[in-house]
Image 1 (tube, rainbow, N blue to C red):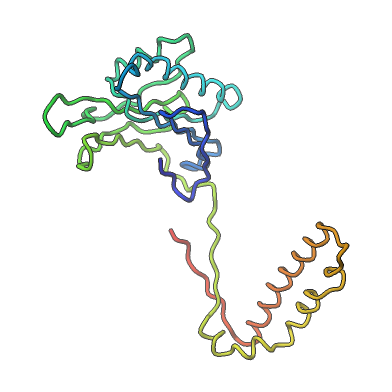
Image 2 (image 1 turned 30 degrees about the vertical axis):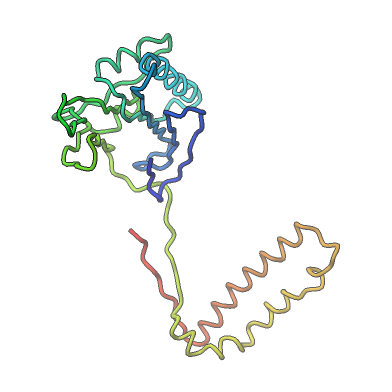
Length: 246
C-alpha cells in the first residue's frame, strides 16, 4: 500500500497476515482520518470457509472505531476472490451489523482476465461505509493495465482539495557569492556573540542539568540563524526562495 508523502499516515496492527490497515490524515482535505484496509482472501486449503469469519473481523474493527469517531471514512479494498453477491452474503453471515456497501462500478466490473484462457471474473472490490459512500465518486475498472491478470479498481473523492499538511517553502543562499566571499563571512565580527555562547562557563559546568543544557543549545541555534542572516545581508549575499515541489 502506497500513501502520498504529503499525507500523514501510520499502520494499525491487528496481527492478521491477510489484512493491512493504514490510517491516513488529510486525504482530499478532510480533517478527519480515512481508514484504508487492504485485504487478500486466499483460495488455498480451507481458507475459503473462513471468508465469512474474516469479513466479520473487519466489521468488528470498523465498529470499535466508529463508536469513538462516527465521522471516520472507511475503504476496504483488495482481491476478495469471489463475486460481489457472495461478498455481500459473507458480510451478512456474522451477527455484527454490516455497515459496508460495495462501491458502484461504472462500466464493466470484470477485474480478472486469465492469461491462459478460463472465465473472466469480477473478484476485486471496494467496500465503503456510509460516510465514505457519499464522499467518493463511482469506481471504475482500469482495463488498460497489462502488468497482471488482475486489473485495478480506481475510485476518487468527489472533492479535490489540497492536503491539510502545508509544505513549507524551502530557502537557500547564493552559494556562489558565499564561496567568493568566504573569508569575509568567516572573519566577520558578528560571530563573536555566537562564540561567547558556545563557550559559556555555565554550559561547560559538569553539574548543569539537562533542561538548562537544552535551553542553551536552543539559544545557540537561534543566535546562529540571526547572525548568519546579518552576515549575509552585510556582504550582499542574497537569499533564494525555492518553489514547492508541486
